[in-house]
Image (tube, rainbow, N blue to C red; front, side, top):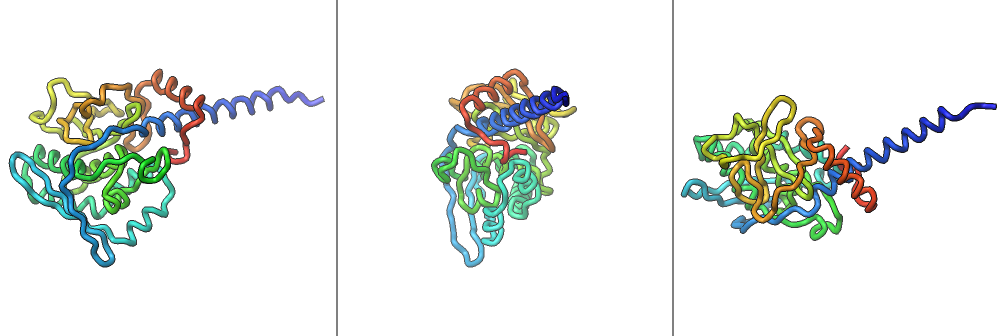
Length: 271
């Protein structure tokens, strides 16, 4: 007679592991859903043969400037055909010619890091905020930066990807990451890169590894270290830089259990 108790235990462990991973992925997915809305837009859109051109008008320190970015239609089509993954979208934002060009235009227009950060925020706030359900019919759809710019719309993580991509361009050189509160996604900027003159008096910061990062909104113009208006402070579940960093284990587990019990969420877009 074969003793299969160890095999049964192994299967049970694998099942528990799958449930925990599903819970984590579902928690992150649910963390993105329900982002707050953005502000007024002053963008213009021009159809150009073979490319899509976007022009953004921003006001920084009382001065008005305009920045233009072109997306080849082939790049847009390629982005739409890619598998959905937050990590892949982060890589795409860090290595994106269009975002690099925006960063270069900002660097050429403004000399100080303070004005450059504000200009990057203003450009991204000029992209129309919409929920994924309204634009795709899906609860969660991660757009690559080429899609967000070409479609001129996105939700909180889509806008955060574009903002982080512009800020971390070679021309600007801010060190960035991402943070996922419940129902939201925002950008993290290394505290040493954020001018003290821009910070609120008691800024929200997150430690990732051995670095301290400042919370930065992408859905509207807010001072670094402050939440979007009328949003309210919620538990910070995880951060992402080159990998995921759990921030509040208790809140993450609770959120995972609630999400799994509700049968929503998916790990496929995040791992």
